[in-house]
Length: 337
Ligand code: NAD
Ligand code: TDX
Image (cartoon, rainbow, N blue to C red; front, side):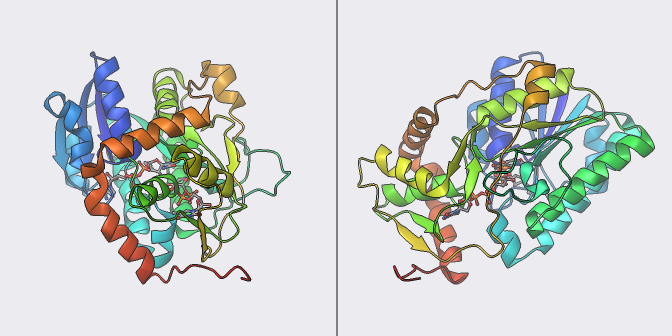
C-alpha cells in the first residue's frame, strides 16, 4: 500500500511512520509535513532513508492534489493540536484543521483515494464525573477553539463521505502519551521540568480527568481501521486509562523518586474541560483491537526514560515553550487561591 501520512513529523504521526516502516515492509510512506514549531524532522531519523519526506502545507491544494494522485490511502494526522495555543491565537487552528482538511478531502475525492481521518475525543466536550463515557453516538459539543476546529473537520469528512462517496473512516482517540511528544503537553512538560530540577505545574486543583492511552496502541487501532474498518464509520479509541491530573503528576514524581507533593498549582486553563472518557466497545468488538499497554506506570517509566535519553531532541523547544507559558500569564497560585 502506498500511503501519504500528513503530520508525520509530529508526535503521533512520527510514531505511526516508524511503526509502519518497521512492521509493514509492503507499505511505502510519503510524509507531508509543514514542520511547524510542533514538527521535528529528527523524529523520523530512524527511518529517514526508507520514506519520502515532503516539506509542505496540507492547505496547498496543488501540492496535495499531486501527492494524493500517487497513493492508495491518506492517513491524516496533521493539525494544530494544543488547546492552550488555540486560546492564545485561534487562526492557525481554523486554517490548518478546517481548510487543510478541506484540501485533502477535495484531493481524495478527485482521485478516489481511501482516507483515514485522525480526530480526538474533545469534539464531544466534557463529561460530569459519573456520566457514561463517550460513544460514537455522543453529540458533538466542543469547548475550545482547538476542539471546535477538529469537530468542524470531522463534519467535513462526514459530508464528503455522504455527498461525494469519499471512502473515509474516522477515529476519535483519547489523550496519548509516549516518546516524541512535544514538551508543551502535560506529561512531557512535567517530565522535562523534573529533569531540569523544576517542580511540575498543575493547572488549578488538578481534578480534571483524562483517559490516557499509549501512542502505539492508538496507532495499531488506526491500522486496524485503515485495513478493516467500515467505510463511513467512526471508531472511538481508548484504553480505559482514566486518571485525574494530580494523580498523573504524583506518578511522574514517583518515577523520579520525589515527594508526591513536590509540585505547584498554577493558573487554570480558561474553559478547562473536566473529564474525557472513551467507550471503545465498537473498536474492540468489531475489529478485535485490544490495548497492549495495560500498565500506565510501566508506560510512564518507559516514557520518562525516553526523555532522559533524548535530551537533545527536546532541549531547544523547552526554553521556547516555558517562555510562551510565562508570557501567557501562567503563575503559581497561593495555597489560599
Ligand atoms: P502534533 O502537534 O505533535 O503534530 C502535528 C504535526 O502536524 C506537526 O508535525 C506539524 O508540523 C504538522 N502540521 C501542522 N500544521 C500543518 C500544515 N498546515 N500542513 C502540514 N503539516 C502541518 O500533534 P499530535 O499530538 O501528533 O496529533 C496528531 C493528530 O492526532 C491531530 O490531528 C490531533 O488532533 C489528533 N489527536 C491527538 C491526541 C493527543 O493526545 N496528542 C489525541 C487524539 C487525537
Ligand atoms: O502544564 C500543564 N499542567 C496541567 O495541569 C499542562 C500543559 C496541562 N495540564 C492539564 C490540562 C489538561 O487537563 O493536563 C491535562 C492534559 O493537558 P494537555 O496535554 O494540554 O492535553 P489536553 O488539553 O487534554 O488535549 C490533548 O488530548 C486530546 C491533546 O493535546 C490534544 O491534541 C488531543 O486532541
